[in-house]
Image (tube, rainbow, N blue to C red):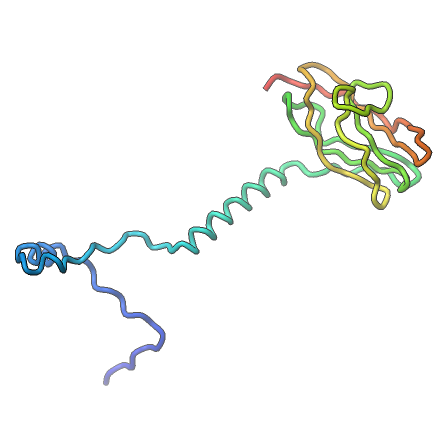
Length: 174
């Protein structure tokens, strides 16, 4: 008894036979009908694009996932801050988080005694508003190699600033 053919399945192409190819090349009349050898590539363009996209997502998650925003133990009434690391290479990146009053803005500076307003004055990031009494992000450290102090300021709506705290960091040569 014969098996019925499956619907929707494509019949596989016959494999390339080099002897048949040579026989066809020996007859000049059949030279125009030379078959092309099958392509060894099994992936189509959509699969390659999908694999590329998957690779980009993997690299992004791996790089960003290795350092997350540090948790901070502060609240709306008790300001606090946290840094992800205290040792880094020059032009490295530090993740940070700050907790404080929801009406305040945060400014982070390096080696400054008052809230900096320019990059030359030591401004790392800010002023940023606190959303639900918390804020977080990352900043790059452009300072030369050596020991430095990161200072976190909260600025209230009247413009007065208070120091949340400071932390020593060490910058190494890349």
